[in-house]
Image (tube, rainbow, N blue to C red):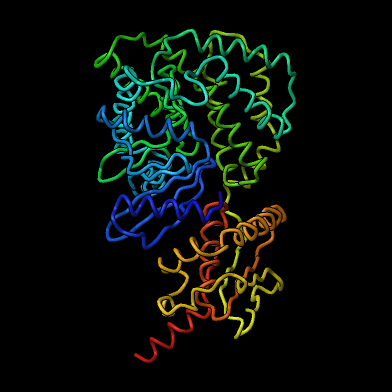
Length: 489
């Protein structure tokens, strides 16, 4: 099914739910999955459209959402569903994730008291999901397996082995590593695993709206141990929670279990917890490797330095009651790897590269590169269907919702930009590695008003989410118009 058909299906779902045709449909930034998210709006109505070609995942998310809602847990409401077409419409919870909140309000490496209190509130809600909601949940809905069992753990550990160790050029002995994997799995499964395991319980899957906490992205949930989700939350790489705060929050979680649910032995629980921290770190590093090394989405590499720091703390300070020497040997190689240290430095250090992005009119000519380097990219947008041909768009430009909706629904702009992004991303990776300082990218159309403006905006957004670089965005023709309009007044 084409992107245009998906857009039409989401438009139909929104109209059926709200009674209005959407005035805008905007694709949201990519996540770590292949799901696509769109925000649809009209007449003070807003919803999120989801497109996912995995029927089983869609079914799990929808049914879990209904179940959690009935249990009084804050999850998005399901508005409309079209499973035959892999699409559904859910409540719009805004744009503020827990991760965004931490980044916007964190002024130093400290973790203020208001953050700690927020995390305690989240942990109380987590226990409701893990324990209260688990009692009559239909685990037959879980995909790909109903439990985080031996098979599931092997998948995660092989993900780490082939997408992180292999791609990072960390040498290992296959059989010795498998032996240690099996020892770790046996240790992890020797505990109570009769709870709901959220699976990806981290700061980007917790939303903050109107002082309330909401949870998303639990379609991979299954039955498992309590320790996994709290390990996921407290060792969430880029949240970078201080170690003393992690220990305080773990103590709070255990005390809350003892007070509100059942008695657990702190030492036994903590011992298993750090085992789950290890497997979660390995699963996360596998994801960083797959998305960063293999798919070349370099912003995922930004998390590697945090993962290395967390891994180093565990192997230097935590003694598990099992012998897994070859796995620990691999961990030491990871921590001391020059390649990973260099990747980490490139990923988290601000680059000296400035990418200048211009929209312009071909009637006025291609902009000059004022950096002194010359060259750069020039993309001709005139082959894309022009909204300026229609009266209702003539006074608008590529930043207006109506024009954005036009490009999303009625043109091949998405395919055009996909090719542009791939080309520019490859150049930026090379420029950063070679310490280049300037790159110019120009988008032209007939009048410099609709197509070129939209394309320039989308590239700026894409690069800001993917790279730590300086971006200078200029809409040349639109700035000229603003200048003369202001002068006439």
